[in-house]
Amino acid sequence: RKEVEQDPGPFNVPEGATVAFNCTYSNSASQSFFWYRQDCRKEPKLLMSVYSSGNEDGRFTAQLNRASQYISLLIRDSKLSDSATYLCVVNVNTGGFKTIFGAGTRLFVKA
Amino acid sequence: ETGVTQTPRHLVMGMTNKKSLKCEQHLGHNAMYWYKQSAKKPLELMFVYSLEERVENNSVPSRFSPECPNSSHLFLHLHTLQPEDSALYLCASSQDSPRVSDTQYFGPGTRLTVL
Image (cartoon, rainbow over all chains, first blue to last red; front, top):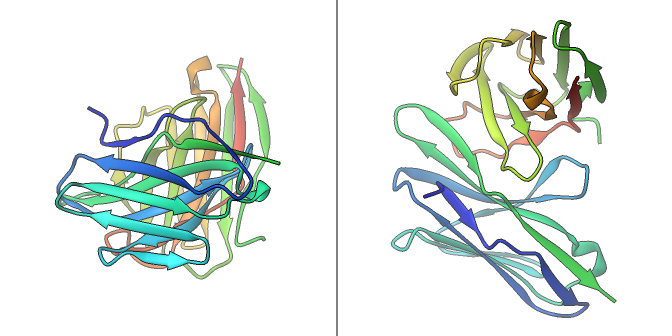
C-alpha cells in the first residue's frame, strides 16, 4: 500500500463546477498535511496547509480527518486557471523526518 | 519569483561524466532539500539539510553526493549516473528545522537527461 494515495484522475470539469479531491495516508505518525499545486513543467507550489479544524481560502476548502487518515480538497466555481496537478503532501516524524508526496491528481477545467 | 533558484535548468550528461547541480535560496531559511521527480512517479525526498547539517538521507545511491557549504547553498554532485536517473531534480527550502510543520518553497528544478 502506498503511503499517500490520491484519486488517480484526470478530472475533466467545466468552468464553474465544484470538484473534490481525496487523499489517504497510511502512517499514523503523520504530523502535518498540505496541498500543493504543480503546473505542467513547473515546480510545486503550496496551495494550502490542512488543519484538523478545516480551513478555507477563497474558493478552496481543505479538510483533515485524523481518525480516518483522510484529507480532502474542494474547489468551488472552477476556473480555467485551476487546471493543474494537485499534490497531497504529508510530513511524518518517527524519529526521522520524511516528506511524502502523493502521485497527484490532474485537473482539466474546460470552457 | 526568485526565492529559490537552481542551475542549470537543463543538463544532458553521459554515464561517465561528473556534474553538479546548484541550488540557492534567498529566503533566509534554515533547511534545504533535494527531491527527484521521475515521469509519472511521486516526488521522492532524497536529502535534507538543517543548518548545514545533513539530517536525512533516504537510501539514495552513492552516485548522488550532496553538499551544503552554508545555509543558502546546496549542491548535488553527480557521477557515473545511469539512464534511469534521468528526472527533474527539485530543490526546496523551509524556514525552520524539517521537524516543524513548515511550508517548503521549491526551485524551478533541473531537468537531467543521462545518455
